[in-house]
Length: 432
Image 1 (tube, rainbow, N blue to C red):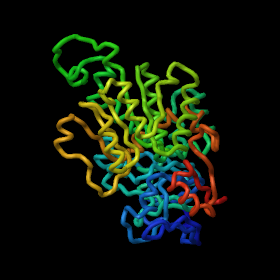
Image 2 (cartoon, one colour):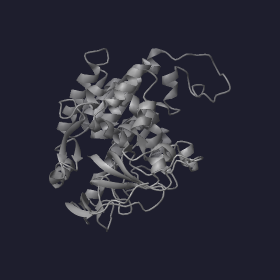
Image 3 (cartoon, helix red, strand yellow):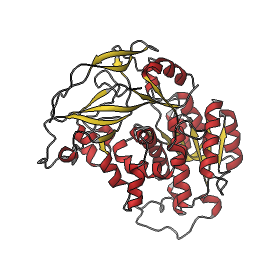
């Protein structure tokens, strides 16, 4: 649909074995397949998942262009994109050059079994941006494979926002720095909360009905008993308060308050600066309301005492693990109660799970592991993004999720600071 771009671009590149970030001149990507789109990047994010590559734990041997969070403008499209397309994802018929798009962090075709049922992150064509085979978005341009099943057009985002004109206008006013959070960290935070709240072991408390009648599939009635206040009170822990952990906590708080649930959340991180950010966010989202004291922010040791006191030794109904290492899993197991669940969205390496089968059996613990299906979670994440602009809307505020926007000239220093926990969510402007 357009002539190919030529010349070189600037890109943030990682070199093996570890801790080596460079800004280099590389060729501008070209259309390689009819389903491709080329996107001119407006902003790209630095994510905690990028640190696995940065630290060398992925054991990669080839240099790569970093980044899997990006928002930008379509500047070239493959031959699959035209008005007469039928039987394929709608974007193949209505995506145009000049459209503003947000990209999930993985490629999805929109046509296979996994995409059709909503498990988009496990698409048969799935590829992660920011890998040797799929260059990432921390560049001036990026090639998006299977773009008709992967990208979100801003027009579609407006349509997903709601039915009222004011809701649609709210979307058009969102800053690029806010929209970029839809690429990964906010949907992943919502996903972690969604997994925990919809787990069969949480449903008795959510529905005030004993197990297993609490499930919608129960076709029998052992009793008509309704659980009392003592039994429906929910206690959650969130392990890790990096950007995704903050999004998970905000999402969990937002969903529970909208349901009118009786709940408490302990938000845990060993880094004081991250705990301070969480406290600032709590002051903003709770706003001196009835749930101001429903969230406690704690170090690792403090969290154990808090959970012991809150639950009289029972433990948490569910734990959201948002770190991705064995220490975090160990803490999650210690905090969760018998017949509880752990929702783990942290990116784990090849280390073995730190439990025996007997430990899991003896506690009836359930685990949900894995990558967020961002494209499927997009509408739920957008809903929270719009309602929590007090946190997601601005850049650099005390309670703002995004700490700053920097140019590529600060890339190496920013990676180092982020790796050491000395800064929060940072976005790159490739044209700055």
